[in-house]
Length: 86
Image (cartoon, rainbow, N blue to C red; front, side, top):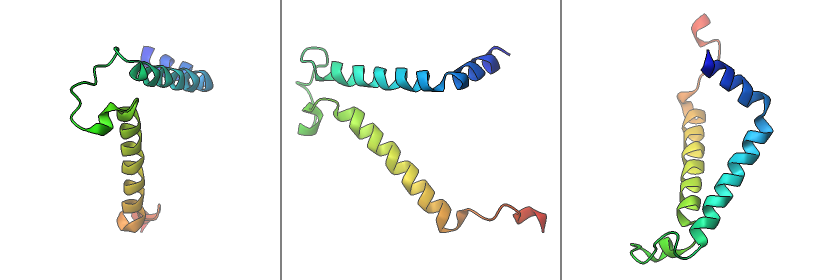
């Protein structure tokens, strides 16, 4: 019951939840850009030395997964909604 109330609360305040999430992501990206907070001396590649590299990498990876999944779905995995009615 508590989980259901929590979900309903978050749905009612969706704009606030989205703003808080974006604010936290921006804060994490800004903290990554401050020298001394995140040690980048032992980075494996040159790209890892850029601020917020892993934030951007993860976001682009998620976008790519969604786009590829949608392409597979439209390529033949999806079927019409009344498939089982026949």
